[in-house]
Image 1: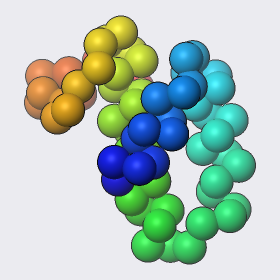
Image 2 (image 1 turned 135 degrees about the vertical axis):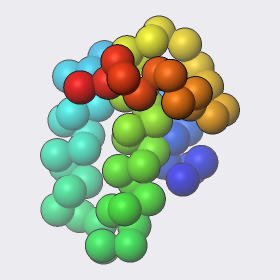
Image 3 (image 1 turned 30 degrees about the vertical axis):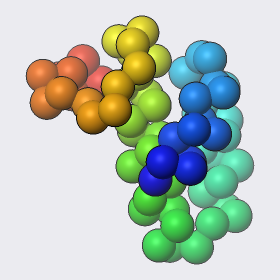
Image 4 (image 1 turned 180 degrees about the vertical axis):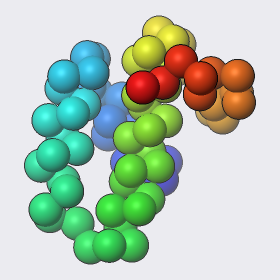
Length: 65
């Protein structure tokens, strides 16, 4: 997950993140896709809150669409 998260941190906007998610949806195996989605959700929380997190606090998830 950390490898995907570090790559996804290059995405500076939610639109860019969504494009990367769409692209990888068709290229990764099911196991890799589950890990990738976890990292993508983590990055989405970071972009929404405009902060970097090692672990996302549970209180942040209510702000994620």
